[in-house]
Image (cartoon, rainbow, N blue to C red):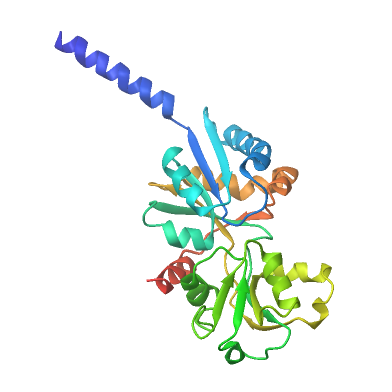
Length: 263
């Protein structure tokens, strides 16, 4: 009888292991990002299908969210094993979500620098007592310590007004409702298509930063790292659909230094 029970336990363990081996639940969390979960799902499904093919996953799913509150619920509800997040989100949740960075995910929306743009101000001191606006979904702490590396104390000495979208922040400056706006590279590039932006100047720029990060939950994923680093070379159209320009290796020392800035 004992042998039978041991055999049944062994069979059950092997069955559970076989059913879950290679499975993946991916949460793509980009607060303030474009579109909606429903809009993004067909593209995310194609991306996950390709990853499943490369990795041998039997039951993999991925879902995109553009609100942080929804991301946090999804992380728990979907029992996430992988996440794709911008740098600020990674730094915020890396400990509580037990994240291990795998690769950098480069895209035009999140990679690069942060800037203060204005029509009338000529220096950071000129912002004192004024209204500055932004459509970025990032904390004052991240913007001050990481995005601007201490060059600007966001929300101190001036009033920071947050808008629902980056374009509203930029228009506030054009309409003289705010003295300046805090934007990223992609938002600053969008100025070229707006009337009146020839008067806009950049008075502060932060350091170049990593864009988004693909991280595993709980344990490293070396096999996935190898697949992702080569993915956009072989699947250019798919990466273009995902708005990804490529995956790159993580600079661990650089990432660690950014983590230290928020302690």
